[in-house]
Length: 250
Length: 261
Image (cartoon, rainbow over all chains, first blue to last red; front, side, top):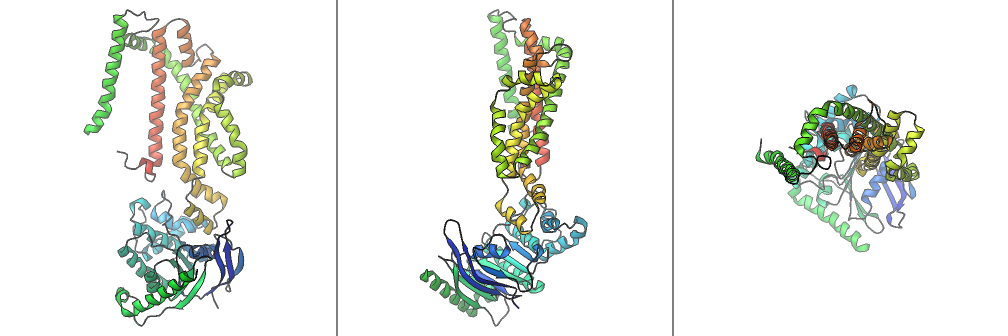
């Protein structure tokens, strides 16, 4: 049974832009699904529609296992989007606070979420005292503190340097495995998507649509060595090929 | 104390000495009578001798000013929150707040004095009208300046209107609000003095503005200057105190107070 199912899903903006057109997509529980595509292909819009932040103008979304609660979906935005006046721990507490959980019973869960992203004991810092990579970790901890089934990430590492990005990629893979999450990951990096995903959906623009749907599997484990292997290069070439085809067709 | 800090203090003092010295010299050289322009030395002497009686009036003025500032801050904040509940409410009422703000307080003061039976109350209303607008305008702007990403986050977690106000909009508005309060501090004093001029009551309960009027009528110009100096000092003190409060409140997170010394 799939976690969610999109049927003939579409979004037209008031100015007439067809951001998404006739999307059919089923997401299986436990998948790491990356959405890759050029700017304007609607991949971020798709994430917002699935999260309920925006409404589709056509088609429907089905949740075969039941409609999600607020705590069932975690969303990591392109920016860390932290409250600048609240400590890191208070930022991680926010989803629980909004759900009516008091601070004292929540503190164990906050510490656990911070430990998951390698920030144990740093909860007292203010966001401005943290580096860009740390702020993004806080954002991930905040998304995970409600123990969601589905984690949505919208180009979360685009603004980070490569070393930090690789480190966070490995952390994200570890969390995906440990927490048995279903991940929807938006990126415009073919390499990043190939490294992380169990499935890649290549999208094309004008109108936003699915150009290819590729299962990804490697013989070896996903370690930094994989990034320079021939097997990895072959997968990247295949994804890039579909991306180029999709762009040529539009 | 760094060299920069020393200049910050020394430079204005040098200007003051030059200015006061020049003033004294002009008055003495031209033998200007004190009922036209008293020299600073005579003003200082008058400040010393008349100080206690003027101080009494200053306290009356300050009492009205502080009450007006508190009212402007509290009611201003409440008004801003009401306005920020919907664009329709804001669009409907904002123009009238602007009308209230741009109408010179001198011109409405006589009406208010007739309507409000109590002197203190009428002064308070006048000063409040003069002072409330910066708090309302700034806070409304702040309440509507929330980060779009944080708005999405609160929507994602299905925050109620109340939660959004308490945990997102009010903290965002805090620096704007504090800037408004700092402007209102000066305006409260100006509003009070203007209202006192119009009300013009006498007796032990009259404020510093009445003492200035009185000194003017009696050609006690040195006393008038002394009262003016007290009024300026009161204004500076209000400005400094509000600056300290603002720094304390915003310390820790807001950019405007980071790296300040």
